[in-house]
Length: 83
Image (cartoon, rainbow, N blue to C red):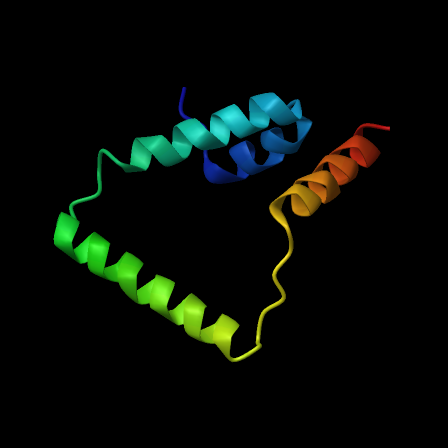
């Protein structure tokens, strides 16, 4: 029985966070099998995106947050949802 996108979107929020993350990760990994882009094209796209992000940062258009601080914020948000 195949589920349509609306059914999947409706079911995801009802899953436990770790289960939801596992389902999403499996979905993302399944896309690797269908990607026909040549490795050089993917590498170039990554290089271009990295260059763009560095330029945005150098021109002051971003606010960097310490990773530990960001993870703590995320954990707090997840804990608040469970309460």
